[in-house]
Image (cartoon, rainbow, N blue to C red):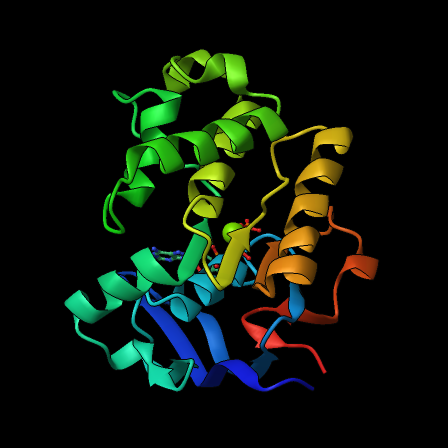
Amino acid sequence: MAQNHIECISLTMQYFSKKNTVTAVDNISMNIGRNELVLLKGRSGAGKSTLLSLMCGLIKPTQGKVIIDNECISEMSDNSLSSLLSDKIGIIFQSFNLLPTYTVFENIEIAMVPKGLHSGHVRDNIFSLLEHFNLKDKAELMPSELSAGQQQKVAIIRTLIKQPSVIFADEPTGSVDDETAKEILEHLIHLKNDKEVTLVIATHGNIPEKFADRLFIIENGRLKK
Ligand SMILES: Nc1ncnc2c1ncn2[C@@H]1O[C@H](COP(=O)(O)OP(=O)(O)OP(=O)(O)O)[C@@H](O)[C@H]1O
Ligand SMILES: [Mg+2]
């Protein structure tokens, strides 16, 4: 396998409430190689989104560590993590998290603010991705004026525009038709093949396993052997 890009070491995540404790991720260890496409598959509630959120540092584990490019992101300061997230980690969320009072174009452009808006270049790149995903005529609309599938594509473009070296995608084809799902997957595979991006994709099962270099099945927060 290629050099490790992401290492999860004995990761556990428990959610505590007054009534009960849920162990969403239960002692998971895995290594993901640079430029690998890994599929995390499991039923609803299995722990996929929690595992992805741990891997990209959005939540801190109850126990264990996540290491990306030899840096322990689960113990990083908020400032260092923010710069990592704006620089080399791209996240495609299960819920699209578009800003309701910004246009489609602005929702994408905002991802580039930490890197700097060298306007002509960014604008051209945004329009070329909007065109690629058949959204060019929607640039000035608000997210509420788009279908769920179109919103999902905007959320994906917002991640792609930063050209991250690792992308965590949570059900990236969950709200689109089969044809659009194929286009999204083809684009992600192109990023792996041509841009050497590492991809970790969570799915219930609507992404065919043949696209993955490796498949991990998650059941009740554990990796199935
Ligand atoms: N913020 C939270 N607070 C408390 N419990 C949570 C929280 N987030 C997730 N859980 C619980 O953790 C478990 C795993 O949830 P998670 O969202 O990781 O599953 P998932 O595999 O992504 O499911 P789906 O396929 O439906 O998106 C579930 O039992 C869920 O109820
Ligand atoms: Mg989920």
